[in-house]
Structures are given as C-alpha cells and as structure tokens.
Length: 295
Image (cartoon, rainbow, N blue to C red):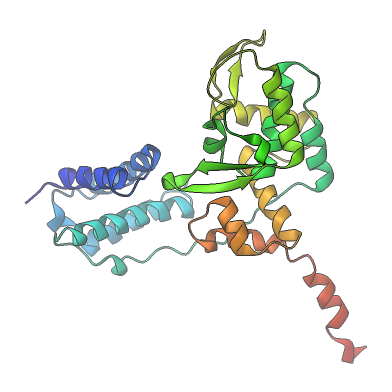
C-alpha cells in the first residue's frame, strides 16, 4: 500500500507531465492537498474517508479569513485527487459524493470609456520607458492577454499581421488580435529598443538601460501608476484590462462563445461572469413594456 505522500507526489507529477498543468498549478494543488492530509492525519488512501473530508471542510469553513472561492479550491483539489486514485485503481471515495460549495456569482466592476481613454493616453513622451508602457496598456486592452502571457511574449513575433498565437493556461495555444492602435504603439516602442533581448517587454534601469524580462509585479505597478496619473480613483489592474476587453466585445455585439475563445477560457461558464455588465438594454425594455395596463 502506497503512502499518501507518495500518492500525492505521483498525482502532482501526473498533473504536470500528462495534463500539462503549469508549475504554479502544481504548487497550489500540493498546498491544498498537504493541508488536508496534515489536518486529518491521513497516512494512506484507506484513510481518505468521506467523514475526514467533511471534517476538513468544516474546519476551513470556520476560518474567518478564508473566502468561499478559496474553500472551493481545496475541495476541487481533493475531488480531482480522488478521480486520479480511482483511475489508477486505488480504493477511494467516489468524487461525486464530495459536493462543491455554492459560490456567490462574482461581480465585476469596470471603469467607463472616458476613464479607459485617459488611462491609455497616460504614458507620454518619446523615451523608451513611456513607449514601452503605452505599448503594454494598448496590448492588454487590445488582446485581453493574461499577465503571464504578456510577460512571456517574444519580441520577434510578427505584429504586422495584426494577430498573435499565444500559449495560455495548460499550454493551450490560441489566436489573439492586435488593434491598429496597439500595433502602432508596439512599432514605436520596438524601433526605440537598442538591445537584442528576446522578450518583447523588458525591465529598465532609471537611465533606461535594459536589464532583462519584465516581471508581472512591474506590470501591475505601472498599470496602477498610470491609473493614478489619469485621475482614476477605482483600483485598476492588468486583469482589469482583460475584463474591459471582454465587456467591450460583448457590449458591442460579440457572441459569448467567440469571447470565450479570445480569452482562452476552457469553459463558457467562466465567460458568463461578464454578461451582467452587457444587459444594459434590459432596463429600457422593462420601462417600455412593464405595467402599461396600470397606467
């Protein structure tokens, strides 16, 4: 009988090698599963009882600072681990007996068009830093790229065609499209680059010297900086620009399935979180047709 720690290691190897999950996903799953087995003192797969799973769920539900969505991640990790064990012919609780917690629908807040335009126009000047930052903001809004996808782009991609193939979550490839405005900003930025560094976006010293690939944290800071510079009081993040990309498409008539493909969502239900922002016409319909017989 294999120890639970060995089974978890085998499962994590399976995620990374067979399922092409990222090292970050592996790290998260390991944290969730080890927290579970340590809390319930599980030694092998025979200890994986429904009672112990429910006891653990009760424990994390009582933690004041643990959000419902985070609790769900623990449960998802446990369920997927059980599926793996059954697939490998180990004795385990049936995964469908472990119900997922109900999570309130996420509400997404976005800035208005005027604020967006001020944000995109905030980087100025002809220095390399300003040109880089403008290209980053324009590309985020034009493509809806995830932060990790943006930071991993190669500078030698053919931007002239107005489209890029990016490698997203689970190593899945998808096509994204670059607007004329973003393309112009990229060209001006790349024409100013004095180096041969392979990454599209690079970190710079105070004197403008290239020192390597830009970090996600640097992009988060620059987006926040230009939001403040544009006089925007709401918190803006790179992921917020991804939200703006999606809602802009939907509010202008794009269908949900197409937006799902452009965002790289595995499931359309993930994309549906945006639809409450796109039903702006419903109030007009209600006002025009509801209760007219009572007038």
